[in-house]
Image 1 (cartoon, protein in one colour):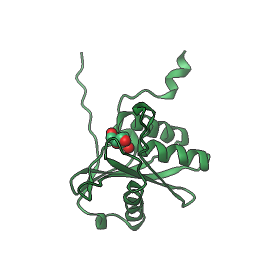
Image 2 (tube, rainbow, N blue to C red):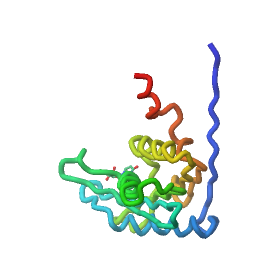
Image 3 (tube, rainbow, N blue to C red):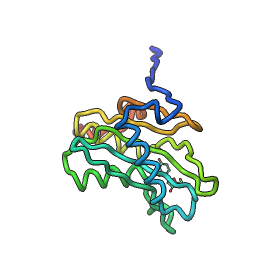
Image 4 (tube, helix red, strand yellow):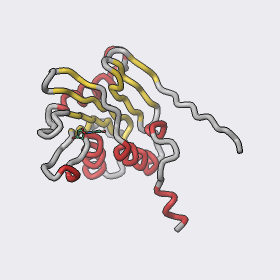
Length: 163
Ligand code: THU
C-alpha cells in the first residue's frame, strides 16, 4: 500500500479589479448572464460566460423545467452553445457566478459534478487548457488554470477505447 497526496493549485482574488481586463469582462458577462436565468423553482440564478479563441464571448444561464431533471445548468448551456455555434474554436476561459434575485447579491456557486464532467471533456477534446474563474466564497473568486483541476480521477472518454 502506498499513500498518495493530491495538491490543487488555485488563486484566491478578492475583487473583480484584481483580474486582468479580459477576465474582468468575462466575469461581468457571467454576472449579466445570471439575469437571463429561468429558475422559477430554485430562485437561484446562475450565469456562465466563455471566452473563445476567436474573441467571442458565449454566455448561458440555468434553465429549469417543471419536470425537474429536464432543466440544465448554466455551465452546460454555455459550453453546449459554444460548441454548437463555433465548432472546434477553442474555449480559452470560463467564468461562473450565481445571483439571488431575493437579496440582489451575487452568490458563490461551484460547478456541479455533471458540469465539471462536461467541461473536462471539452478541455481534453481541444487539447488546450480552459481557465476557470468561479465565485466560490462570498466576495472571493477562485481562479484555476484548467478545469481538470476540479475533476481529479474523473471518467474520461479515453476509457471507452478499452472496451
Ligand atoms: N446550477 C447551475 O446552473 N450550475 C451548477 O453548477 C449548479 C447548479 C443550477 C441548477 C438549478 O437551476 C439551480 O442552480 C439550483 O440547483
